[in-house]
Image (cartoon, rainbow over all chains, first blue to last red; front, top):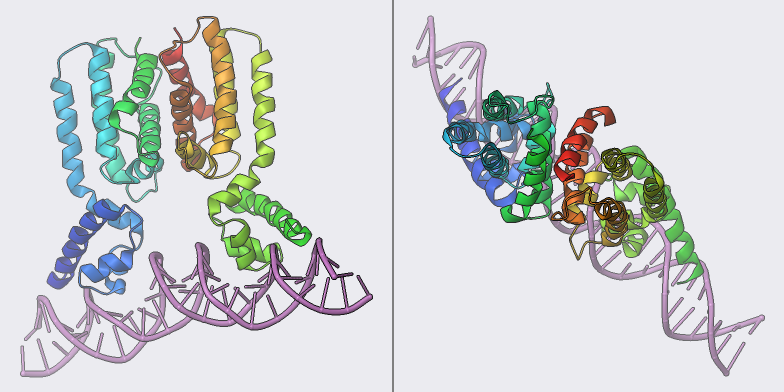
Length: 182
Length: 182
DNA sequence: TGCTAAACGGAGACAGTCTCCGTATTGTCG
DNA sequence: CGACAATACGGAGACTGTCTCCGTTTAGCA
């Protein structure tokens, strides 16, 4: 890629991250282009669809997901607490941006989604936590990580659109956790 | 209301129902106006926001909800089956239109939502089923009907955006049911 | 330095939302 | 019946966001 192209691309992603955080994923793309000092054409050449841009913005977030999962694995305590803890982290992780839960959870299991790679990272992280608990025989094994992701993602989606506090969400996560524990 | 106004209003709702079913809740309102043979201004005067129109469209659906809840109450069998049965009906009910689950579940608990009345009907129906099971001591009582609605609504939302079959959804509903049963 | 492939950018086509206001219709009252 | 408010209509057009096309510019190589 030519140096100027790379520069512009980077600038667009940087601006997009900021704008998405402030205005949500529906922010006008032309606005992002303008703030990045490029024409709309340039933005659309680099990122043909909104999802492609979101995908790029999320790259940094991926590392964060890994970290959080790592930490969850080192937690002590009863399986129920560890599971709940992870669920809360999970909700937090996918709720970094307004509309994030719906976008991520909707893309889950969709082979052709532009943000699929990000979903896989998340699913893998979730799988690690779940596997550990399963190894202890604490979690039923007829439920797939994808299903768990959708259950928790569903709650996060509702919480996001209804502007619920994490404290309000917790009882719902408890129900899911109790349904999963053996 | 003047007779012609009533006529137009009815026509708009009728057309909207059809268009929403075919194209989802995002269908252009100007298109609905045109198909109803009125100007956009007329549509917007009757229904200032999209939600107001959706609310009107859903009026017939309300009766359907009541019926379904009534039927669910007469079901025989183990509490788990009855609960699951109701959950499936619930998902079906709010999934009549594309985007329905998100819209309805998002409005749940929001005092000022234009479709609030519809949510209340749904919540009341759900409450009746839940109360019956609670009376038998089959369901834990530290979970509110609103929370249950959000849990199941969350699953329905994911199913809707990911185009999942009801069969795929069932295992997730089982987790919720198991988490709710004593 | 000159050349060419790559990249730019912005004008503008298109689509959807929503309003304003001149025009038309209704229903009432003398 | 006829006229006159009050009510309602409707569509032009302003506005916003998406996305493309293509003439112009620039990077990087020979």
